[in-house]
Length: 150
Image (cartoon, rainbow, N blue to C red; front, side, top):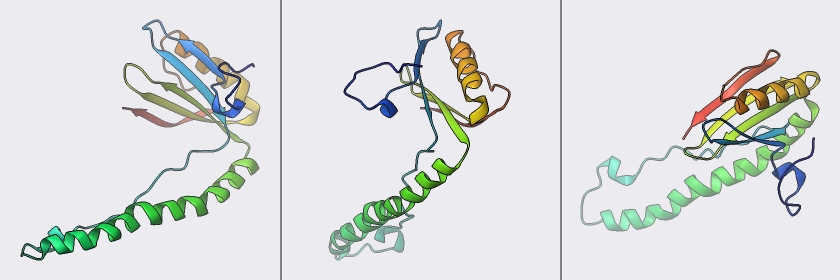
């Protein structure tokens, strides 16, 4: 299985396969062990929700900007950096693989299946053939873990 694309990009950044469905959609199919980490900002309530509506509300708003940035950017970034090595180690020790099909046009669509390493080649072939024919499948031995339209 030879990946397509530029030689500039490392192999793990390129799709394993690319297929075109009868409706003209191009699907990129990626295979990997790691599950993508999600950016999770903290819940945050603004001062206006506390009823601050006097002349000092502008000052409160200006004082809240650093607090907002800390809660929405700094803390999630620290959490992301701390969790990433654990997620990477967990994925390397697991026998589960993810097959992710991504269509970027006319609207983004993602399908992600989880599959055991022993069934990986068969599931990858079934997903590729089904998408080429314009169908969505969940092959035997796999589990559809995420489907998103955007």
